[in-house]
Length: 332
Image (cartoon, rainbow, N blue to C red; front, side, top):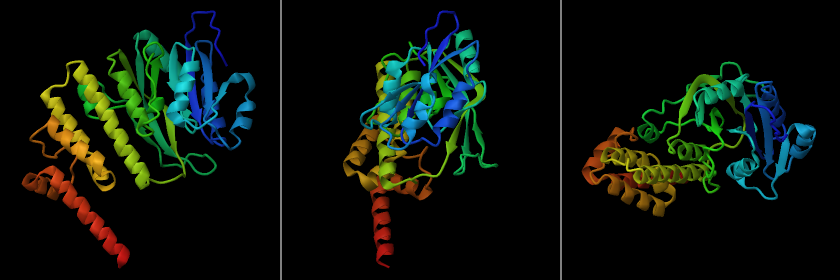
């Protein structure tokens, strides 16, 4: 539904990318429709990322209540969100995944905070819950997370503080020119959040959960998935590093913190991408020539070995031993 706002009521665009989620879509959409009221006009944009299930039939049943844009090829969630953002006309934008649901009153509360504080971003809490095959929440699996404290901003970002996709309301004018990077499929939400937050706009927080992130049966972590995440993780850190450097905020202490954070995914790269590992190891030493793993190294023997032979050699020794043990168990 496109907005033709003739009043002073603020407009809000909810952008929902979807791919083969026909079963989940009705609950997601109903959680948006329930937010509509006299104090809020909602534009619901669903971008069908080339689904092959019954998604189109489900969307057709809602008629003019939603604006549907179907992609001719699969672009991933980030690419689909970009298409939705191009179509959005609301003063504010909320991204919502097609298997999650908004909590009652979320949009009205977030809008009130945004307008009252002239905020560029409103960050809410969120909830995680497991659902069964009937899409019913499994009792006892609920877990609530508060909104992250983003003050001071550069250090909060360097500590990995961020909010997931649907826990943030953005003023559309504020994020103009920002796009979801289709090359980063995971953690794409962290990447977009950091892009927006590092523009140093006004941020308001809301302790109540904005939505339920619903965990359901699906593919488990694979080597490909772990490697995709590790590469994406380093892409986000590069974004943070470049932005802070451009803003003259990259102090030596922050370089050292970045080096620790780059180390976090170093084992995955060492096991599965030697070129990326070598680049990362060299860059860690550029940031901190005396680097020793502390913040993201839980294995105390590795801390000791790193002090003796250097972290790069220690990681290579560890991953070589792990490969040898894996081959040995396969041959047993």
